[in-house]
Length: 280
Image (tube, rainbow, N blue to C red; front, side, top):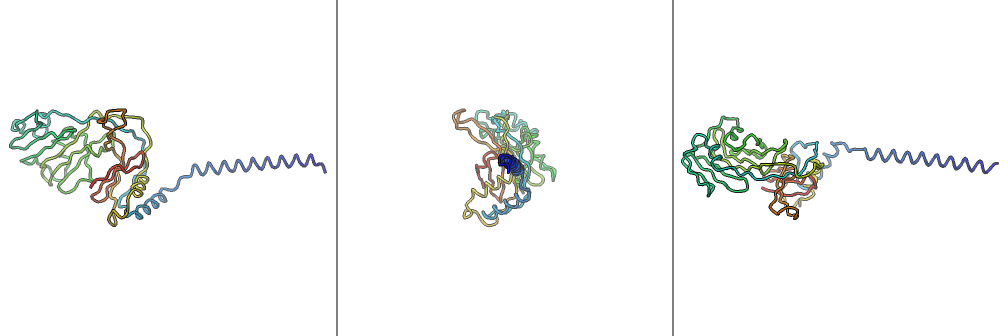
């Protein structure tokens, strides 16, 4: 037997075997990296996690998660006279205006500037609305075309409208109106202007990730049984920068998933998944 030849063949055979096994390992890793767990399985896992923390899911969950950027904006500072003309187009002269105090008042109603881009309008004589058309509220609102109805937070006696930027609602720039089916009794408005991206767009977490973060952040003992999640919506909410790169008063609006459960509203940072705020 020629041991040199045999040894050579053994070396070649083992080399080919190593190449084959290495190629197979690479293929397996590529398949694992490209594998995406079915959405139905992910949704089922999220429902289980929510149930473990006292929540149930009573709404559809958005499956897409776009790239977004943080926004920078300033609060609107409209002139009192302009607000009076918009809110009381037929009775402007009937309101006594005090620009230094930021108030206007008369028989038809009143306007009061509250600061930070917010003002209150009240009607002594309610404005008429056509039944079934709540959007008419925006006819008496500054830049009303910027706002869209928020059907989740609106209800009997109140219609809420969110200012919208590039198709996404800004949850704390709203028109909160008091109405019945045929009349507008007043509203409080917050308006932002000069809205622009503050940085480059980045991926946001999915709605399922936001729900997982909410569940994991909650102590089951602090919430009631069967808390139904009725809505999950992607939009923006305010955050004040205190890093020192800007003044502490510099205001930014960052992407959030808003989750509504009964009377409680949660905001989940759409970049980090942190539960930023909750309000009731």
